[in-house]
Length: 129
Image (cartoon, rainbow, N blue to C red; front, side, top):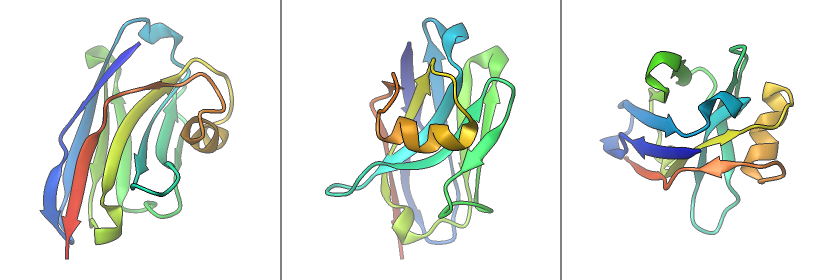
């Protein structure tokens, strides 16, 4: 499975960005896909996950502001980020796993690589105040 992110950049607080992740390879094996972020010196954080039936889970810090969506026909995962805050500044990674679990479990398990997880190279998001 290969994942390639795009859409990062710099935006002022209150602005919006949409990240995209194109997935290729054995995509039919993916049970969960999601977005994660990491700031240097801190643990990787689960932002949002979506599973093959369409169940979604969000991290507490982004609920109500971020929206995850998947376009199966285009093999693309999106993350719409609204009302961005300086604390959203991080490297954002797209990931996929063939492991079975609930959407809530996937946020933590994938972030900590406790299950087989495939990662993209990341895209930087910087929010200025």
